[in-house]
Length: 164
Image (cartoon, rainbow, N blue to C red):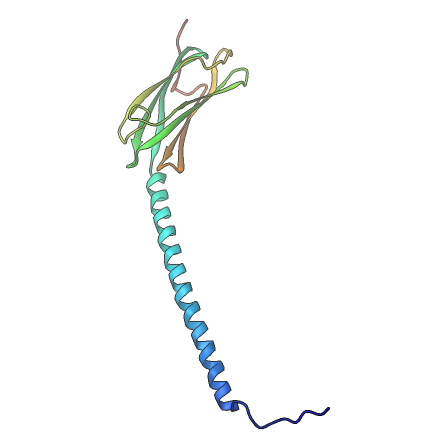
């Protein structure tokens, strides 16, 4: 069986115009979508960068680690410079036997450090048995996402061992 081509169909000029119109329409839709996505990403990134910059300016200092045994200590922390409230205070202890302990203070007014504050955190029952602390590190969270830390090591003026 032989098929015969009829002369019916759309003109090549109309087909070309339809293809160009379709391509322009798809391009326009993609352009609007990509512009919206780029704008949203730019705003999100800018907001995160601003928060990170504010937190990067925060400076914590351990003023004193006062202890008579490594089982109990008072850690005095100063927040000398910064504008953001710091929360979720974690204090990490390493004793002369290289054993470590961690004490955490959660949320609430007492457990946050505000700019200009000087606070003492009592760390009781650390479980450590060494003669002295080698390192004490304080880590606080800025805006819930960015850690701000400071540390005091043996031999520094911030480490004060009292007689028992």
